[in-house]
Image 1 (spheres, rainbow, N blue to C red):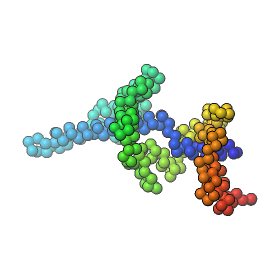
Image 2: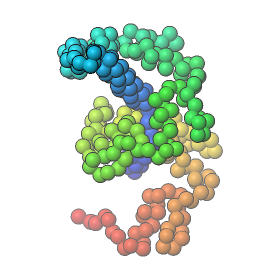
Image 3: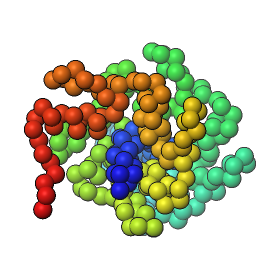
Length: 265
């Protein structure tokens, strides 16, 4: 029971800080699709504006749009609609020759190839850090500007990335779409489910180099390492006593507060 509790606490930590690469890729795809749609809309507006006025007389705007029969979204060009339809059909005609992963747009494949080549052509002028796609650079720049354009309407907390905002919203909605097939426990993000599965598989990929003890999560290994290093980063503000983990400090604080959270039934 103690192990399960520790695993649960670690999952909460991991839920805050862990973001899977596939989630990042998905977020990049969504952002780029949005930017591409906005760019296409911009060009359509320019074309329409150029044709609106002839000899000082405004003509009626051309309403001939290409509309998706699945979701109702409309586009100014038929080829853009064709690309959009791949979201509904699942068609991914562009395949990586290195790993076999497929994409619904050629530009997404080109970006993906940089993972294999290591190419990072987009560089931050503030700190020199480089990225393999422009959208990741734009997200990174918010670290320097402090811009957090995604704000929760429930509690007012703001985020620099829509992905983190969407994860946060599940706190309010209670949504936990990732369910363990072994025990039925659900999680708000897939990475937390993957961590949880190690409880069932017994996998312990994190090993202490000093004593050989293994752990299912990196946070548990980090806690364990304090036994060897003697590090005690959690200090009582009442008496100055220090502890190697926050849970031990919390238990100690009850000596000062007199709190008795566990009562006999």
